Amino acid sequence: MQRLALVVEAAAAGERLDRWLASRVPGLSRARLQALIADDHVHVDGAARKPSHRVVTGERIEVEIPPLPPEELEPEPIALSVVHEDEHVLVLDKPAGLVVHPGAGHARGTLAAAVLAHAPGTAGVGGPRRPGVVHRLDKDTSGLLVIAKTPLAYESLTAQLAARTVRRVYLAVTHGRLAPAEGVIDKPIGRDPRDRTRMAVRPLGRGRRAVTHFRVLERFAEFTCVEARLQTGRTHQIRVHLADLGHPIAGDQAYGGRRHRALPVPLEGLALHATALAFLHPATQRRMEFTSALPPRIERLLSHLHHAR
Image 1 (cartoon, rainbow, N blue to C red):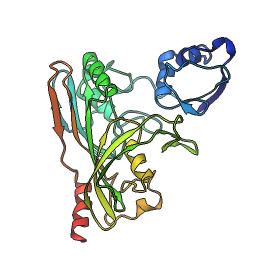
Image 2 (image 1 turned 180 degrees about the vertical axis):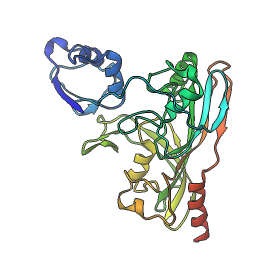
Image 3 (image 1 turned 180 degrees about the horizontal axis):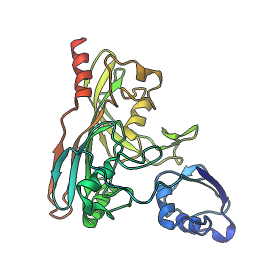
Image 4 (image 1 turned 90 degrees about the vertical axis):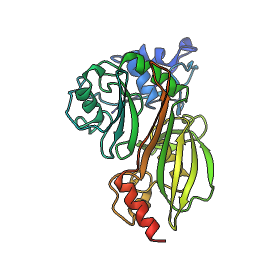
């Protein structure tokens, strides 16, 4: 990981952040810098900012530049669970354990490579390493996600995500008895300053706004079954928000602390599943709604909790 620390000079005050960086960081395109900003690898006086942020004299700009994986993505014939497919979109039910796109430590065996083998026409839709990928699920999270098969679909779906009109609902099993029957968590999320591989709730102005709606479905002696709906879509959002409430998701080694080991049954992955997905079809504008049944790992956990009462 290359790290740079720059200071805005008086003559540059008022420039867009992405343009200012493009003229001062050799070898990186503006598009690459915009991606780094979006992935929270650029901070202005310690806070996340948009590419359109107008820089101010004296601001300290810190940039992290992760190494790029190879540009060419090789198709891999990995089995996919297809929920719906037409010429514009592909809706998949991702299993836990499958990484969505290549990254550090995951060059092969990704959902993106499987999509490229299944639908070669997705090559060139979106980024070269993320063909058709408009949103992600964590490696150990399962459930529904939509892939854009055409540039039209990609533009439409990314716009719907930005407008927060895509409905994404998850079921989670958390540690502890969550007291409120329902609520809204509205807390900014950014990189954890103590561990850059993790995310964390950050002070106002030092993270991006993140909003999660939750509703308790069932309480057990030491666990709670929760429905969570994303209003925004930050990295690890549901995991970070619930852990910040003191109720980390079962099986979460990153945010559960010692509690992630206190499970009554083995759990391969997180007790987190994307159960519902809805969006407007990019071509027909018809509302598309999909649901996914709970996978066996979560069913086993809930069954044990029911019988332990």
